[in-house]
Image (cartoon, rainbow, N blue to C red; front, side, top):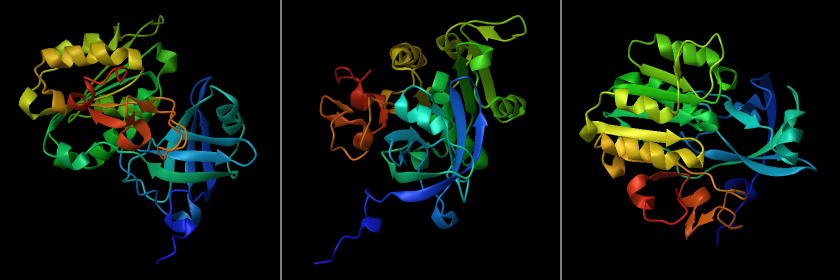
Length: 278
């Protein structure tokens, strides 16, 4: 019988190096991570990794960079507790542990050749950025692209430089809204659902991808259904108290579904009848 080595398993922790840290907001920091030997993460957009700090613990963090980025990967961490506070204290050159990637990401091969509508609210832009940049890096493989972004305030907007580039692109339709404007804000004010009626699309060839706070999903989905996008072509990313990444601890279970294994990406037709999923 072949003996399973630790390096062949999902339990292997790869000692990795932080090569860049950037403060984005009062709560969010950007990290660029280099794996041992400069290996690529080899992930799908929408997947996550388990990040560990010796003596502190471990937590699941979404991958924010595209698979087209080689030699390192990126993530954004919001400071919300003991582990993330410890992570925020680390600097360039410090080491962390990485397991993964885990979960089912966005089905990029199915999306190819179709029109895409990205809907991101709040911290949802972090995992969705992985897919957006993958699509932009392979722009000829996809149809029309619309990006709808919602933030609480202009100061809460993440990836401002990239957002500015998306705005300028002629092959991307970009719209943004904030819940509360400041005197310098010239854009739309209101919930992200207010942007959807203005999107022109062909429902039979359009996939909608939604990532954001759980409270927004049912309202965004309702607007997309008004646009007659088929339920199987509405994709959502769910995160429910994920912990181990292996489906062992049960923290992320939703009526028999494990977000860390069956998701975090689901099509709406697969979960619309599942209590507590949305």
